[in-house]
Amino acid sequence: MKSKYFISSAIATLALSCAAASMPNYTVKVTFTPDEDGLQLYMLNFDNGEKLDSVLVDNGMAVFQGNIEAPVMAQLVLDGSRAGQFILEPGEITVNPMQRTTESTGELNKSLKDLNEKQRAIVMEYNSLPNDSTLETRREELTRRYDALNDSVFAANADNVLGLSIFLQNAYGYDLATLDSQLAKYPGLAKSQRIAKLRESLIKKDETSVGHKFKDFEITHDGKTQRLSDYVGKGKYTLVDFWASWCGPCIRETKVIKELYNAYADKGLEILGVAVWDEPANTLKAIEEHQLPWKQIINAQSIPTDIYGISGIPCIILFDPDGNIVSRDKQDQELVNDVNAAMAKIITPEE
Image (tube, rainbow, N blue to C red; front, top):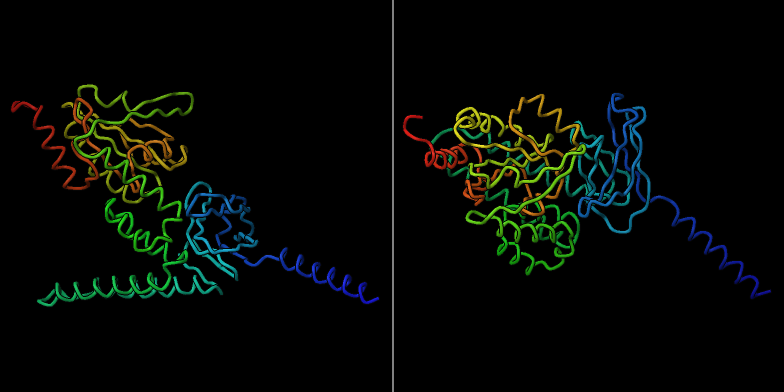
């Protein structure tokens, strides 16, 4: 009898454990407008791009439920466009992409929200400073406060996804030596696939910096195959803009590129757009909407960005007539200066 009691008790305990394991430990509610009803919303692991789940938007709402062992930074993608980030952790999470807000019962999201609010307060104070004799001193003070805030929260979370998120805010501005020194201090960060990819991109960036020869790539879209070598190294200066339709800075920079196009397109400058990390339909819509007259390579995705070590866009590279890189990662007036200097070498005074 006693053994039967223990067997029954063990079975009951196992059944309860299985039931507990099958119950979701997180619920994510994402609010939209009825206009988005019927669209597919994807939740991705921001660190490695893995699809965690997908649901249809219904009645202006999308709901994810599931289990997660360790928190991750999640990326929402709706109809091919990014729709916000948050920390996926056990608890109740509500995300409003339009208002860019996240409410959560989880501690990491609470800490991230608190950090963002304190950051915004410093930025607002910075932007409202009076233009008087104390301006520069106060700006320096607020910059130190901002950096100290980030450093403090990072130090307390260096071993979790919040710390990784803070680290990535600065990491894309590091060179290879600086990144390696940081990883030596915080070896746990090296587990991140995004950081590993960033490190690899910095190596590739060094290999495609000013003074190096172009590296070719091939893209096939809608039955047409194009190569970078179809345009670069053909006896003309060639300005290549790696961009995406969803990228605000990319669209703003097209104004500068248009000015260069108008000034030099008939004087020997080739301009080429390469659409990366984007849906072809969105790319084509942006080309028409913003009236971009130069040639384009569509649907390049991450092929050229992997080859050229591009971690942020727009990335604009100027190649000389032989295909050597003479300018990289310049924008606005710095880009104009480099193109002017290059074109001055081939334009005769009469032109």
